[in-house]
Structure formats: structure tokens, C-alpha cells
Length: 272
Image (tube, rainbow, N blue to C red; front, side):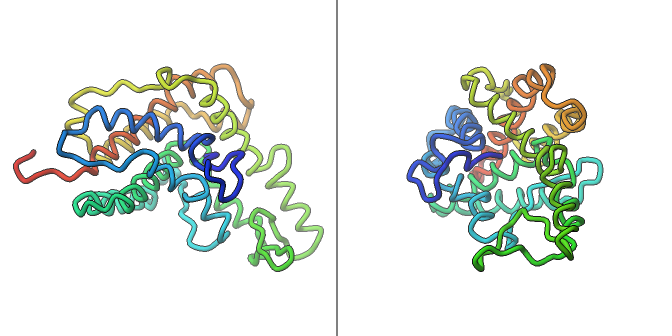
């Protein structure tokens, strides 16, 4: 979700100044550090943010479009469990890295886990965009410019079909146009708010009993109930959607990231 917004490729500032993912991670990190025990070492936030932006999942899509891309989509009413399995894998690897004291690997896993959680809770990712894209790509090979594959061009079997498919995808009410417009609205809302305005309320019990399945699916249920993306596709950005983004969507995402990170910290044998 705009983790590479306005960031030049390979910029030293990539993932540090601009980007919704980065800002959400920073707030979640504050929650984590406030609740860490003195004997627990969690990777520094600067190191975590190195694996966002061009160093994160969105950057991978630029470097090798269509190859080994993590698909952070989930259809709430028809969940196949693939996205959550990805989050579980990141938890396993993060826990192992923390046990070994491998800060670089821990930072990588923390960043990619947070990215998957954020995308999975973003309403625009609850629409089957991947399936729509595959349907419009009647010619599966990527369109190439000077030999470089360009992702995002819906290639048809002929010129007329290519133009038609791209209009359905990129047109004023196209699948990707709506997806981008929703995420842009979230990004603008996030940019305009101070961190304290979207800081979630988390109880001591939730922190003590942090568990990734509960953290992710509890947030997903609350966000899905709002039906934000369906309403957006019908009426565009409204005042109600803006308030829900500020008061519910962003705090729930931050809370889920923080609890998933806390749930990944290894426990000592005498701890429950």
C-alpha cells in the first residue's frame, strides 16, 4: 500500500520518509518497544524499514514482475488460508531469527510480516483483483518494451482486445484504477494524521496473550463488517469512509501488526 510512493529506486531514503506501510510500522513499533521485557532484543525500526519500500514486497514486483511475487490478497468470505499461512511462515522465521540473535534476518521477517498483515487488512485487497487481471490477460506473456517485461498491461490476442482489456483494468472505473484510488485515499489520510490520532487501544490482556491468528482475524472481521471497498466502488471517497479509515481501519491495522510482532517473540521455558 504505497510503500514506494514518490520514492526513487535505490534512494537512501526509500522506506523511511514516505509510505503508508512505513508509517504504520513505526507506530506499531512504539507499542512493541513499550511492552518488551528488558532481556528481549527486537530489531531496530530503521533496520526493519530497510526491508520496506524498494527493499520490500512492492520493490520485488518492480524488479521481477510476475516472478515469485507474494500475493497479499484475501477474500474474507472465501478465505483459502494462503495469506495467513504466509504470515505464519514469517512468524516462524522471525522467532528463529530472534532466538539466534540474527538481527538482519529478524528485521526482514518483521517487515515482510507487517506488510502481509497490512495488505491483508486493507479493504482494496479483499476484492479478487488477481483473478480479474488473469481474466483480462488473454495473452499471458507480459508486454515488453525494449525486451523488458512490463507488468500491468493487459495483453489481448490482438490490438483491439488489448485496448478493451486495458480500459476495463485502467479506465475511469477499472479494476486497478479503483484499487489505486482507494489506497491513495488511505495514504493521504495517514499522511494528514499525527501518530497519536491513530494509536490503537490495546489491553494488557491482549498484549500478554498475543497470538497471530486472533490478532489478524479479529481485525479482519471488524474491517470486513464495514464493507468499505464496496461502498467506495459505488460512491467514491465519502466523509464516512474517511472517518472510518481514521477511527477504525488504521488503528486496527496498527494493533494487528504490533500483536503479531509481540506474538513472535520467543518465550523462555519458565514463561507461560
